Each structure stands twice: as structure tokens, then as C-alpha cells.
Amino acid sequence: MEAIKCSIDNITIGIPSKGRLKPVVIEFLAKCELTLQLKMQRQLQATILENPNYRVVLAHPKDIPGLLEREILDVGFTGLDILQEQQTKLRSVVKTNDGKAKICLMVPKNTEYSHPCHLMDKTIATSYPNITQEYFDKLKIKINIHLIHGASEGVPYLGFVDAIVDVVSTGTTAAANNLKIIADDIFESECVAVVAKPELQCNYQAVNDFLRRIYQ
Image (cartoon, rainbow, N blue to C red; front, side):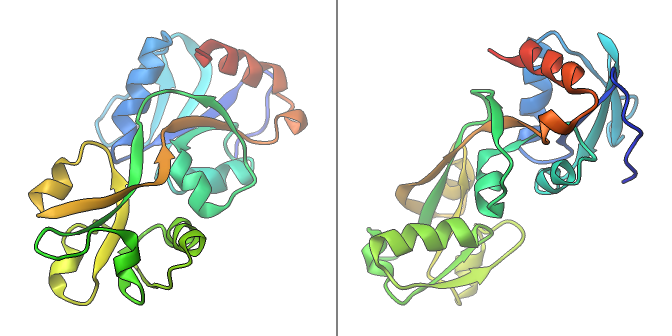
């Protein structure tokens, strides 16, 4: 993605291109009276009806922190869990109070596991290896982590892992895959707006104006 030349009036905003956070951000912006204009459903660039100086780029939510660190984006919307997992130094500026979810420990319903301590020396599949390791380290429980990059709910039935750690919004997907939650206190997440080094931006005032508009 090519960075655009900084202008004191223009800002580039990153929003998720997929997943549970995309509709959350679009609805949040609408509540702030900022209307996202997408000509086509799969379009990855958009504008804001109320302010033509706001350039919107749709990107994978896990890519948004990196684009902020490289100062390609001025403001980005992503999950607090993603910031925590990537151990980024970016700071969340605005909590939207939307898109709330928990990172949970889940096991198949037909197992006898009912507490994290039952997973000593067991294998856990997750796309959150850092958050998972930190959680079990605090409990002083030794585990093996199998890194995955997609949906994890079906992995236990392949027979090589004992549990999964994944984000849960409603619990519907877990229930549909015959999983039970045995710990829901690993990490609490929500959608946040993050800014990239605001004091260094030539469009510092424009970024601040946007943040004030979405602050609730």
C-alpha cells in the first residue's frame, strides 16, 4: 500500500476489511454521523460522505497496527486483542464500547476437562500464542501451543490438540461445534481507534478533530 503525501487537512483511516469488526466499525462511524461510502461490496477504498478529506482504506484487522506503525495510516480501527497479541507500542485512543468479545479457553463437551489446571502438558491450538502463553504462565501451568491462522473451532476433532483459545462474541459458534468454555477470563477485547505518533503528524489538528468527533 502506497503512503500518500501528508496534507494538513487530509487523514487516512484504516478500517477492517473482513470479520466481526467490519460491521461494528461501520455502525460506530454511522452513530458518529460519519457515513462510509462504498461503491462496491468488496471495494477496499472508500470515502466519508460528510468530509471528503477523510480517505478510508479497508485492510485486514491484523494488518492495521503495522500500517499505523509505518505511518501509512493516521488512524486505524482494530481489536484490543490484536494490539495485545502483537505486543505493539501503539496506544488505543478511543474505546468504542462496541465489538466486545472475550478470549476464552474451550474444550470438546465430551471431555472431562473443566478447569485450566486440567491442561497441564496438553496441546492448545490458538491464533493468540502470546496472550495464551502469558495466561498459562500466570497460572504456572505448562502447555504446548499449536499455532493456527484460521478458524479454530473444528481443530480439536482432528485429534492432535486438547483445547483451543479463541475469541468469543456470542458463543454460538462454540456451541455449534460442541465446545464448552472452561475459562472466559483470558482477555477482554473491544473495537478501538488507534492513532500513529500524533505529535509527529503534519495533519495533527485534522487527526485530533476526527478523534474528538468519534469520542463518546
